[in-house]
Structures are given as structure tokens and as C-alpha cells.
Length: 235
Image 1 (tube, rainbow, N blue to C red):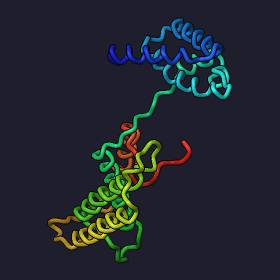
Image 2: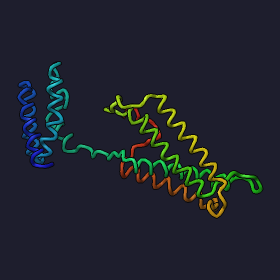
Image 3: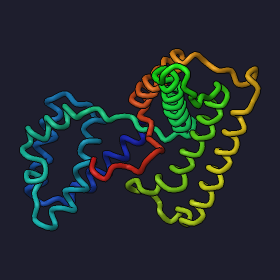
């Protein structure tokens, strides 16, 4: 944290502390001493205090104490020192679209290759060339991202719902894009083999599994938010 920001944060904390009850003021005083003894940096101390002070001032109006909210000083110190690492969260359009693409391409190649592998020989199976699969996955990835952009992003806590487009506009936009997706995908199927090569089913299954595994890794690594569904209500 920049020195100026830390100085501002410290000043805010001292100002809020003046609003504490005597009991809560003593709790914070003891906690400060414990944090210093634990060799926490000034930034760590002030950040932790800032997270607590506003809540304390608000909750003490109903008679709640710091002890009731945070446990003993030693328990609160332990929670601060051993605070679990926050998982990264990313809503970058490029990463979300990539996530969608890898999911769709992985599923389509697995299904296409799997059907060709496990049906009886001589049975007619609908297969798709590589270009058709890439086109379907690429356009689908964009459409799924638009679902997040038009609908799902407004269901997250703190979202500005005033900017949410009207339902009929979102449905019209997504419906139009889905229709275009369907038409372009089906047109790609009829491309000549030179432009739409067919891949060995076993290779397709391997590629599909690889894409899904890589997607899982990237999702965990960068905390990519899914654009395929609304956020979970319970976290």
C-alpha cells in the first residue's frame, strides 16, 4: 500500500475509534498490542482494524460488543494472522470468452469423437469437421458471454441493477445471436473437406479431454467467473 493511502487509512481508523464505547475501545486497545507483539506490519494492522471498526460502531448501537462479534482478543488475532488467502476473481471479457470456448470445444469434440468411437461399425454417425467445431465453439463462447453481460452480471452482490437492460431486449438480442450461430454453424458443416477437415475420433476425444482439463486449470488459476449461469446464492 502506498504511504499516502496508509496514512489516510490510519487517520480514518483513529477517527472511528473515537466513536467506540469504553468496552469496545478497550478491546481494540488490547488487540493493537497483540498485533504489535505478533509482528504484524502497520499496513496489516490498520487494514484489519478498518475492517472491524465500521462494523463495531454500527453494531454497538444495538448493544453488541466486540467480544460478541469477534470472540476473544486472542481468537481475533488468530483469525487475522491465519486469514485464508482470497481466491482471485476475474471478469475480464477475454478470459471469460476463452473459458466458454474451451468448455464448448471440449464438449463438442468429446461428443463427436465419442459417438464415432462407440457406435457399431457401419452405423451412420453425424460428425463435424474441425472448422465447424471451431466456428460453433467460437460463436457460442461469445453468445454465452453476452448472457453474462446482459443478464447474469446483475445478479451478483453489489451490482448496479439500474443498468440492467429490459428483459425483452436481452431476449431479443440473445435470440438473434443464437439464430445467427445456428445458421453459420450449419453452413460451416457444408464446407469442402479441404476447408473443414475431419479428425480421427480418438484424436478428437483426446483433444476434448485436454481442453476441458486445461479449462479447469485456468479457471482455478485465474478465478475466471463462469458466464454460463447466475452466481450461487449460498457462498
